[in-house]
Amino acid sequence: MPSDKIVLNIDGDTKVPIKGFIAPIEYTIANYHVEYEWNELANLRVAVREKKYSASIFRAFLPDEAVSVGTPWQIEQTGALELLRQLHPNPHLDMRGYGDPGMWACLRAYTDEFADIVFRIHAEFKLGHGWFTPSQFTGHLIVNRSEEIISFFQMRVPEGPVNFEVGWQDEKSWDDSNWIMDTGFCAQMELCAGTEAVLQDITTRLKSAMSSSTAVTQEEAEHALNCQFYKSEQIDWVSMEVALELAQVQQKPIHAISIDGPLADETC
View 1 (cartoon, rainbow, N blue to C red):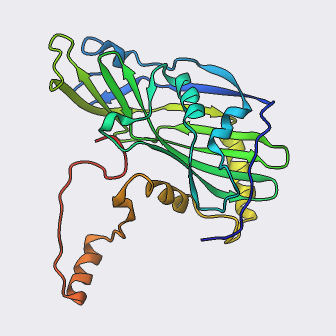
View 2 (tube, rainbow, N blue to C red; view 1 turned 90 degrees about the vertical axis):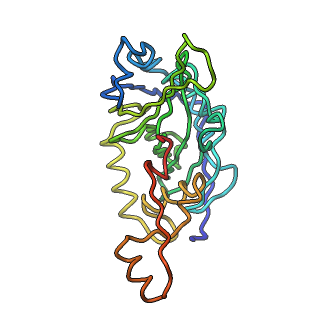
C-alpha cells in the first residue's frame, strides 16, 4: 500500500449547487410499482430538483487526518443524511438490522491540483407502509486542492439489471410477518454537481500524472470499500475452471454453494 499521505480540505464559505434526479421506476418483478398496487412506489420522485449547499457539508466525505491512496475512512453521518434528503425526505442509515450499514470513502488518486475520492453509502428510504432499499450509493468527489473547492460531485445508484429492493406491508393486515418483498430497476437515482465532461477531463489529468504512490485503479478503490461491508469480498475468488485445476493440483475437495442473489450489494 502506498505510504505517501496528504491532507484534504474544503473552503466551507463557497456554495455548491446540487441537482437531484429520480427516474420513474421501469419495472419490478411483481409489478408493485404500478399505481394501483403501491402509489408511493409508483410516484417516487426526487424531493428537491436543485439545491445549493454550503461546501462545508462535503467535509463529511473527507478524512480527519492525512491519508494515502487506497485507504478507506468512514463518512460522517450528518452531512450524508442532509444530501440524501434532497432525494427523499426520510432516509435511514441503520438498514434496520436487515442489511449491512455503513458509509466509506477512499482516496483513489491525487496530483498537486486535484484529489479524486470515491465512496460507497448504504441507505434506505421510508415510503409510508414500506421501505425502498437501493443496492448502494456510489460516487466521486473531486476536490481542487489548491483552491479547496468542489470540482465535481456525484452520488448515484449503479445501473441494474436489478438495483433496488422494496418491502411493503399491507395496511389492511398490519402484521410484522406480512411483508411483501420485491426487486426492480430504476434507471437514475442521483445527486450531482458538475458534468461528466468535467469528470472525464479531470480523470484524464489524474491518469497522466499517476504513480504507484499517488493513485490506485477505480477497481482497487471499489474493492477496498466493498471489503468494509462484506466478508465475502475478502475471499480470493477464482473461476470454476481455475478451482477445478487447483483442486486437482492441491488434492483438495471443492465446496460449492448455490445462492440466488448478489453477495456485494443490498438488493437481496
